[in-house]
Image 1 (tube, one colour):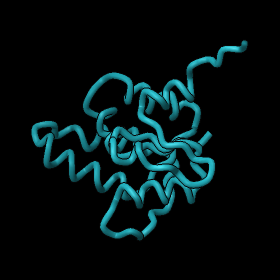
Image 2 (tube, rainbow, N blue to C red; image 1 turned 90 degrees about the vertical axis):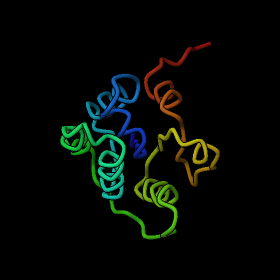
Image 3 (cartoon, rainbow, N blue to C red; image 1 turned 30 degrees about the horizontal axis):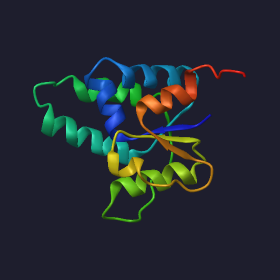
Length: 132
């Protein structure tokens, strides 16, 4: 399984205990995580802007982010980082792109990659399937 987490999922996992943190930990334990340099750049920018009093946040983010396999960014479309991240995940063969961004959740992913919210991702990845 290959799981690419959008920047907002990584940030939630870094700042708030809860589902996103559990998702990062569980996927990291299974060696499923994919990421890209763009995720790290975006995360550091948001942490500096929105959480300036959390001086420890960039280092905390980097520790968990370093557990993921880093894939190449894609350059286009240059004006839409969300589209670039989805394209990078798809080109790396991700099975699941996880985001909290409502705009991205409405997109239809290419190939076999699914786009899911953190809650949907948890259910897909870790809830037992009921046999009927």
